[in-house]
Every structure is written in C-alpha cells, then in structure tokens.
Image (cartoon, one colour):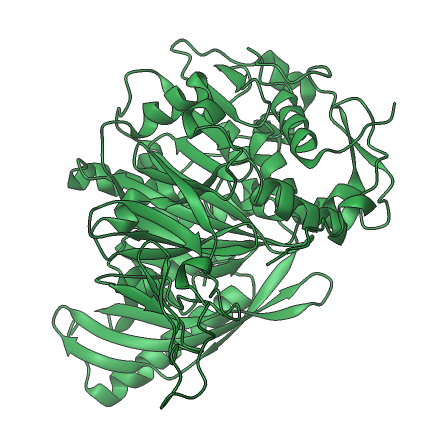
Length: 423
Length: 162
C-alpha cells in the first residue's frame, strides 16, 4: 500500500519572526495553521509529554485516559507490569477506543462502534465478523490484524511520573531533560510515593503558550500576586535563581528563605501594589513542615512543552496544560501528597492547596492574565511582545528579575517548529 | 431552650431561610457577612463530585476555621486581582437527611450563574451543598458545607465563594 505524506498547513506559517529571542509576534497565539503545525511538530514531534502518575496505573489492568496535545491517549499497565500508551483512536474508523477516564481490571478494549478489540499494549487482536457471516462478507483474506492499530507512544518513567512521546526522534527522557532539571524533579519526588489528594481542571480562555509563559515568568510573580509577596513566600529579593536548560525549553525557578530578612527598600521605592499591610486571621495556612533538606520554599519547574511541577511550601502539584484550539486551553491540576504523610502533614497540604488552582490565593490571577493578553492582542497579530527583562539570552540567572526562561521557551519552540527568522 | 432541635417542619423553614439569606449575601456582594453563616470551627470545602467519589480530600477551596473564611474575603478585597463579576445563586429546597443532637444534615442543589463585567452570563457551576447545620440559639449555623460541584471543570477562576 502506498501512502502519500503531506505536511498540511506547514508551508503557510508566517516567517516574520524577528531574530532576537526578546520579541514574540502575537500571531503565534492566534493562528489556526500555527496551532496545527504545533500539533504535528511539538505534540507529535520529538518532545516528551506528561501522561499520568505511575500510581494512576498501579495494577495490571489499570488504565487512564489523557491527552498529548489534541490527541487522546490511553495509558495502561499490562499483566507483566509494563506501562503502555497508545492513541485512543480505533484503527478502523477512528472512534475513541476507551470512553472512561480511568478504570481497573481491564483485559482488553473493544471499540463500541464495530467491536474492534485491542489488548493492553494497544495491539489489534480482533475484528468483529472478520471471516464474515455464513461464508459471506468479512475482511479480504489478505487483511492482517498486525497491519493495523492506533499509534503507540514511547513511554518513560521518572520518579513516579509517566511521560510519553509519539516520536522516535526524541532523545531518551533523561537526555531530553538534562541532569540539572532531572535532579530538581528528583528533589521533590525521588524515593517517595506520591498520592493524589485532589484533581480539577481549570479552563483557560487563552492559547496554551500564554499559560506556559506565565509559569516561566518569575518577573510577574511578586508584582501581580500580592498574596505571595506580602507573606514573604516569594520576594524577588529573597535568595533564589532561575535555571534554564541548554535547549531553553525547561526551567526551574526557586527561592529560599533568607534567614535574616530585612525590610526591602527596593519594593517601597517602586510603590508596587505588592507592599500593602495585609494580615491573615488564621495564619496556620502558611505554617508548613520541613519537607526538604534545604530552605527552598518555592520551586516551579517546567518541562517543555506543557508539564509543570510545583512546590510552594508544602503544596505539591502537577499541572498539565492541554491545548484546546488557538484560543483555549485546559489546565489539569493534580494535587499531591505522599504515602509517608501523617495526618498533620496531610492537613497542611489541604490548607496550602488554597494557594493554587482557580480559587488559589496565588494562582487565581494566572487563570485570568492569559485571557487578558489574548483579548488585548486581538487586533494586533503583527505586533510583538517585548521580553527584554534580564537581556536577550536564555541563560540561567541568579536574578529572578528576568524573562530568560520565557525566552528559553521560544528558543526551543522555534527549533521544533522550524520557524525561520528575519532580522 | 438554646440548642434543642426544632420539629421537622420548622426546621425545614429555618434551613430554607438560612440558605436564601446565604445566597442573597453572596449575590449582593456582602461578602464580609458570609463567614457569619458558619460556626467558628466549621468545615467549608469546594470540590467536585468526582473527588468525593474517589475519596480525594483536596479540592479548590478548603477552610476548617471561620477565620480562614474571613481570610478568603480579605484576600478577595485586598489582594487578588480579577475582573468585576457577580453570581446569581438559584437553590433547590433542602432535603433534610438527618436531624439529631449533633446537628442537621441536609443536601441542597444549586445552580450558579456568573455575570461578567461585559454582561456575559454563563452557567458557572451546578452541584450540591452537603451541609451540617448546628442550631445555635434557635438559628441554624453551618458546621459543615461541602460544595460538591457536578463538574470538575472551573472556567478561568473561582473568586467569589459558592
């Protein structure tokens, strides 16, 4: 069988992208063709995507549905204990194979449309009426089950996380992440068993990249989020740093308690809204426990394109960004505790969960601000965002008054998208 | 008598009145009065039916003291940034599940529309209030309100309480 390979939409992407990493044209957040190309080159391209937790498929026969970009994906654990991931798309006529979000004790998946059946590895094992009925009808004799099946993803596990990639060209996950990023994931997750304590989805009224930019933006944190700043969970004058990996696509922003904190002249001078005198009636929310062997109270980590691992004090969460067209995205929040938590630790996590999510004292604004940009740039596809804070490069930095990790995102994005540059 | 449970009929009336006042308080933007519907050592949670079904404790909002509810409101007023918006609560009649010395357990369905500053009005949330009321000096106060949203999806943000 001959197949025609086309790259629909690829040719039409505009190439008027300035050479500097410090400018981003707004059409990148608006165009359907750009969105389609992202699906092909990033989400089905040589990148790794968070699928689920190992604990979501703890036992043989467990499965969980997720997304890699637009593509629906099923993650399973087979009888031998191996984890598999395959596209949730019947090889026959394309219907969803699995209609549930999750389940247990599954032996195989049968498409409801025509009962084409798949095992837990995603192999096609049966076609209803393959031999016809009473010698009539049925598939032609040369039809082979093994020629058909949904696309399978490569699967890699890391400290209880399951990542997947549609691409054979993606480097191994550890090489994709690099040692520094991997060690920062290990810092939060290694050697303990994460337990999901809550989930929800926040529907964002903006392009997925606007949310990713926001997560990588250490410049805004103490300005937009008063709650954060006033209680000194995060001030840019705290000791901390930005780590940007070599590819640019992954980052870590962290800050640590400055044991002898003093009043901050810099903040007062800027007359930032961040400097009000707001006090909590019940300060127990912020009274955490010592969980790590360092004084880091905040570590936000991203893996290109859409994975976030968050530690804000004892509030640990995974955020998975799922694009939903050029102007919308879903943000799936998975709030974590650990198997080793006692009741008091768990209560702290429940209280500190108030910091994040759509009702989060800190995160509330992040759900809106992407929409403010999306609406703000509606008439300005050819105008460009300015990302010059901290210079023009995408390097690690001891200062968090920088947009280096956002520029890093665009560096990796442009590399994968093959977007040409003009001066 | 102070803490005696009234008969079922007057109880139903008391609860309906308390719920109506609660909804009106939020919808009228008298948020500072909202914690007064709760006892001091209350439990208030906003979560999803799915989290409850799966036995997951954490949700979008968690408070186990009335002071935490006050902090929610002062954060909304003083700290958090969001576009002007309001809710319209439409409540079902409370189903009284249990009435005893520990309190009154009830369940009430709700539908909340959100009205944004540009006039856009959407069904923002539907679900059930899973309540435990304590009758204090003849008045029902919430010892527990679990807001069980039918959907796990929240559009953009959940600023004003449900």
